[in-house]
Length: 316
Image 1 (cartoon, rainbow, N blue to C red):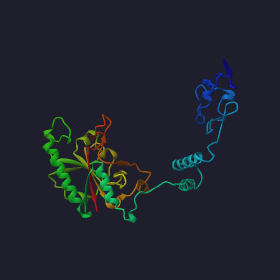
Image 2 (tube, one colour):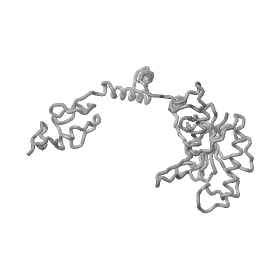
Image 3 (cartoon, rainbow, N blue to C red):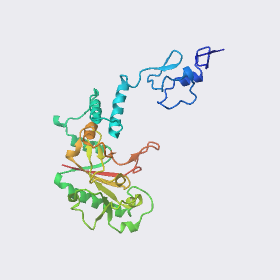
Image 4 (cartoon, rainbow, N blue to C red):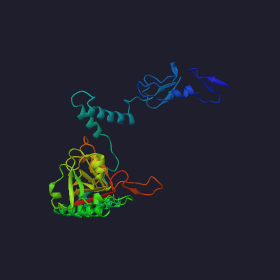
């Protein structure tokens, strides 16, 4: 036995709501029709902007609209910032008002785990956490960067030559023609020249990414040398914003080896400090150790999505 609801849709006498009435509970996006939604008094009220999805009376959707309080108020603040940033919100001072509203949002959560002013050694913490991710980390004095970079590149060149220029750790045929030439490392524009001053000319060739090298050409190289934008002590993460000395993203994804110089003053305690120091208009790449995955049988494999080896020279 069935009974009829106000929209003409049937429901079992036991109270189970029919498919048409169930469809009326769906809250559509404004202006986007719900397939199969009933017409008349069983349809959502207005344009479906009701927020809490409560059925009122004859099946009309009722609830707080987007201008209400609670989570919807936060939603409007976030959307206001997006509109201001994309130029879709007019009026003088729109961006400033959106920023002020966002800044006024309550943040009762813990925002910092480490306080450098309180004696926390965030540089040592970064070195420890980066090493936990299986990065090679060596600390040098500020004036020892050039010697460290030269030593690392020469060692890498010798290792690549001994392996027949086969990517280290990979099985497969060697390439004697590669072993016969000096190792080649790509250097992005803007990298401080003094960092490369001690590299022996016969041991390694420093290539420029101009005109931009293809993915195949990058794959033929023995590695890349870059700086960074900031580093995060809490997570052992290096952040690139692809500015001077860092290059485009492909430079640090395709080559099998990445040597990165991090200055002590670039180390931030936590994520919040790091993002506050970054330009949100720039692209950002976050690197936590060498590329690795454990997708298959929980067996860790390195070098799948990026460099197999990450070598960090921590200066100062």
